[in-house]
Length: 317
Image (cartoon, rainbow, N blue to C red; front, side, top):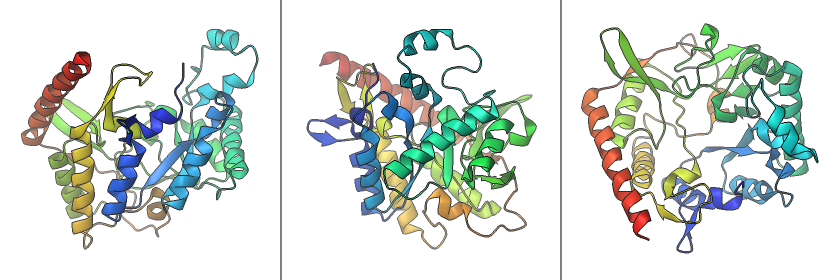
């Protein structure tokens, strides 16, 4: 069964270790972030839980932008169980290979939700699971949304070379795409491993190295991905048994502290603010940054040990 607010707030021992932790961290270090808020899950959750969360984020001064998972659309229908069983291509939660008109309808439904919430119309779109194709960008252009952040090459690769984007800002059908930074964390003869920059998947040492390399290379924008539920560990998706994820919390706090202490080089802002800056001759450079095994191997070992320890602790209790 889907979980609503607890998936966002992640309350453990009467304290929010998800969104509450993130907002506290951002406030301490004067960081503005973009929150892509799922708009269509009110088809299932009739109390519309994202409304109050979206207003809370807006009141905190963060960007509130549109996130859409197509799977929620099926709950509008009384026979949703049968419909869900028969959906094949595209998959129930896929934007990839979805008809342009259908994608446009879902996006416009999301825009209507923001209107119902009495929040400013979103100007940036992020798709479910970073799925994308050319039809999605045509639909975005028709919807009037000027910016997107749908691409993380290590998460989803459409196979279309026009959307093989690692960094920079890139116009597609009049929509300016701001991909999550993708880098190569290791390579060997004939093979390289790509990784998109996330809090849960990269150590702070890696992230700091990538930011410094991006700055030296003149990459004007770095998008980093995270979610509130990454700051807790749980045994299953019911979230009935959780503990705080101290490792990921430490990573986010260290990153925010670093950005705050290096404002002469980095401006921590939302995606819409960054995307709306004037384009320059190097804005659309598609540079793949090279990581370092000296950072990758310790991170892999750290995550393995911490996950083992946390799973043992959860099992104990």
